[in-house]
Image (cartoon, rainbow, N blue to C red):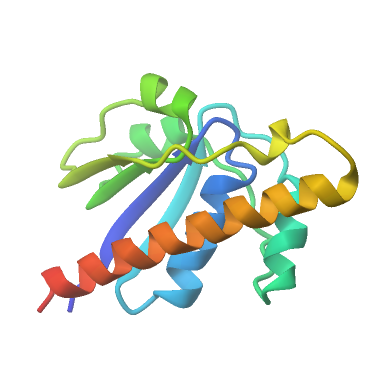
Length: 145
């Protein structure tokens, strides 16, 4: 089976898209080959790093990249998936896309409340991203059969 190439995009490439990239490559690497990028790349969100470490996935060494640099480099993907509302309206059209999807997850950066409340919210987002990526991997495995 050929791996499906996936690009996860969000505004800052600091949390949701980084989580999705890690789940795709580390839990579903037999079916998916993933990258992530942002419209305005920034440093990784510490909450995202922490909640991923809780389940044994270290994303602390991952770095943000620019969606426009990937586009200009001529990279192609089987799936381009936006994981936030702003990215859905500002993303460039990638050549050769088989499917473009939109998964509107909440932004961990926007979580309010005390530390524990923000951690609970980040865990909820992490788990939703994990489920979505597992569904994509199942679809990719089915397409390769």
